[in-house]
Length: 509
Image (tube, rainbow, N blue to C red; front, top):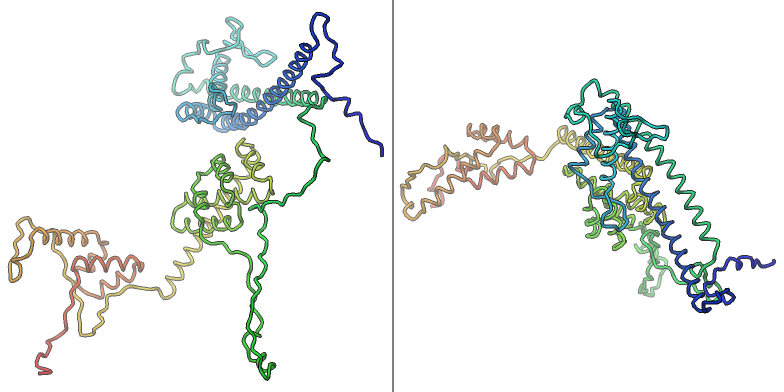
């Protein structure tokens, strides 16, 4: 097979010895100027390509936002248009293209300027003070110049509510102007793509030192580091050493030994458990903060495992049961990030987050749809499980808390407060001399507060001083709630225990 040497014709050498110099300029200076000219043109082409690609990325972000505003105007009218203007003005986002320029405007600032211009143009067209040219430009009829910030707008456009006579026409013109700008964006994208192809083609015509690779001088195979995206290899079984004892009848021992029984199948795959500290920190990242999630994974890729994905979904179920919907949604959101990265393979992390951070419309739409469906299934299943548990508890035997004395001869009574302690509380009787009256007031006040905080049906049952009525109320409560009620009754000294009848003190004498 003949070798192709034609590619070497495209070599661009900046120190060619055959360069033709000017008779009044020395050869070394000519070579240096030639070198500088080649490098400057090469760098300028790189910058131009980067600039054109950044313009495409910017348009890909602005286009879906303009389409959303156009759809809102079409469905909801001028009120939607003005609400978007107010939202951008009152709650602007600081998200902007990553150009590194200190004066780089945000996406909201660009959209705000566009909407302001469109509103001014449309108001002037409605009042027949402006016209639209064949190229789509809006010119002021007074001076035949484009409408700008200095153009005086009609008084009705500054009012809070647009007059009904102007609304319909204004909505149609706004929708038409938004559609015009969307078409202009598409045209500009086609022009930029062709310019990029042209610049890249010109760049590829010459072979530079950046494109030269030494491919045959040395070859080596480095052992790949394990990746959390790879399936975990099954660990080889450890060799076990067993001690054998020589016996006279080995067959009998084999038949009666439990060691000869067939081993049960053991699931060698690792089951998921509670969230690790890293996974819990990953679950606390807000929904939609793809930059933070990407930075977290770059620092700690241990969360990119199937067990972490499963643990996050389990945590989402538990949080939903407890009523913490925000945590449940975050766990579902982060588990989907892991799942997408794993499904896309080794380069999946960078590929996935690149699309999400750049707000690729199709990727965002697919992810949001997947998120809503997954969380919806978890919320629905959790509600069904709670309903099943409540139904089974209502139909079957349910654990209850009842006040029952251990000794049948002991009767349970109630010592209820009549109200808060009086200001002039006096302690009378034997043993009250050493009591602190302030401590007694605190106890009586605490007792009254406890009683007042009881549910109304429980207070009514206690006032009857009948144990059966109190047990009915306690039986309808959840176990944890009833246990807390009994503890509070004991704390407030509301339970009394006394023996039934008269005890014979003469027995045993």
